[in-house]
Each structure stands twice: as structure tokens, then as C-alpha cells.
Amino acid sequence: MNSQMLLDKLNNDSISNEELILGLNAENHHVIGLTFYKIIDRKYCDEEIISRLVQLSSLLKDRNFYGPYQYSHIAVSALYLTEHEEAISKYHEIFEGMNEDDKFFIDDFIKGMKEGEGVAQG
Picture (tube, helix red, strand yellow):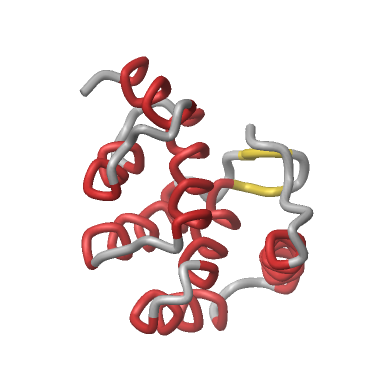
């Protein structure tokens, strides 16, 4: 599925949970960003999504997503916000090894999402 088809499905909420992995594997960073939000909103994850979020937490470390938040911050936050036991375990593993600045931004993003404020969707 190409990036435009994924964008259309993400924007009109017709993407299935099973197709979310395609969004995380897209070459288009906007598609990846919107997929983060869908995963968080639906609290959906499986082993493949957890694995890809872990990869993206290191692969996109120096790539800004929105304001001060890097894609890696959102990927790590998504692990926590799915409320899935295995994902939360991976979140803690990654979070412990991060520097204080990254921890601050992740905590801030999670707090905003839990309070319903979130951030604008890229």
C-alpha cells in the first residue's frame, strides 16, 4: 500500500488495526507520525507493532516530529500509552537508558496525552 493510500486511510479512520504496521513501516514520516496517534488512540498493539516501535525509538532519534518532540519520543510514549503489558515492559527498558532531556519530553508527551491535551498531529 503506498503512502497516499495509507494517509487517506489514517485520515478517514478506515485503516484496520492489522494495517497499522504498514504505517509504521512507511517511508513517509508523516504517515509514521499519524500511525503513532492511531495506535495510541486505539490502544492497539501486537508483537510486530511493539517490535517496530522499539526500532523506531532508536532509528528516528534525531528527527523532530512536532515542536521539541522527536519521533523517538513519540515511539517510546506509544509503548506506554497502549497500556499493553509487554509494550510497557519495553517502554521501561528503553526509558531507563535515556538521557534526562529525552525522559522529560517523553514524560511531558505522555502527560499531555493522558490529560487529553495531546499535541497537534504533525
